[in-house]
Length: 95
Image (cartoon, rainbow, N blue to C red; front, side, top):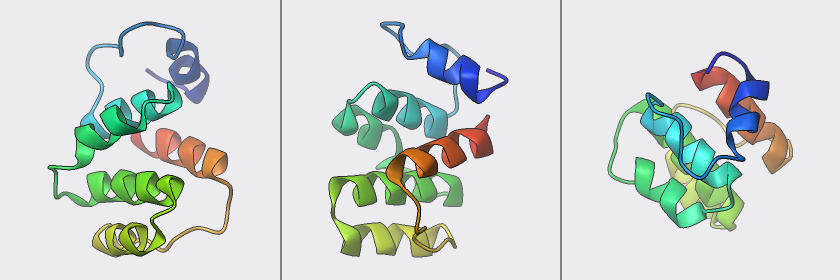
């Protein structure tokens, strides 16, 4: 995966492309509308990048307290942008 466009195009596939990082796997499943599978990709990880994706997922879920905890773990602040914009920002960060 080299571009956000490539990543978005892969969402039409039944399976995630091989070689994706856990963060991109989570974002891929989220892009497919499978929040639970997306969450499962990062829930057990403690690195800052995974925490950032984890924060986004809890923000999307509407669990702002939990999201803010994970943003803090990621050393990020909760953004004041749409969820779609944050998803694209995260994909761009991890490609």
